[in-house]
Length: 254
Image (cartoon, rainbow, N blue to C red; front, side):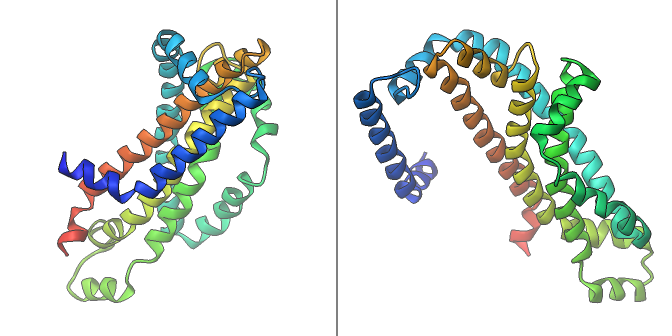
């Protein structure tokens, strides 16, 4: 409890800024008086409460499923590519240009193609999420593996260590902070990827629900799932922070 209070005081300026912005938004929305265009924060909270059952029991699990599957595939593909490129200059020259090129194509243009390929199944949304999230994981992990101390590797070689031992005892621990940096970026992007995929074609999910409310000119209904998406992104980010802290305790001890 004491820790929570200390953290609240630590981020007191951010909390104050958020309150000021919310009050300004509330006053502006009341003066504008067109809730289908600019709903007030109180109106959005009321809509969230009104729709809580369908949002939390139907659409939130659908979006979370896309995020978990997409992130899981991104971690496997991203780390695998990073390891391969760090061990083989030929693989780096072959794959790295494609990794960069994949991020130069507008996602909003590719998403309809995924819908054509995979239909309205979960895999069209997962494909969008993977395309957005595997890049930061790949690049960060690759940089981490390459930044391993050459002196330490040479020292281990003189002590008789083989490549496998150097990889697991030196390179993997050294690259973990880089991997988590990429994962923290990816986890926030995954929420965006899932929402974009659902906007373009889905039968469930927070992005789909937001689009459905837009066609009904329900401003608060559009914002309600967006608020949930934002909260979901923050919670996933904090979860990665906790996992990072647990798995990299050795850094504090050293």
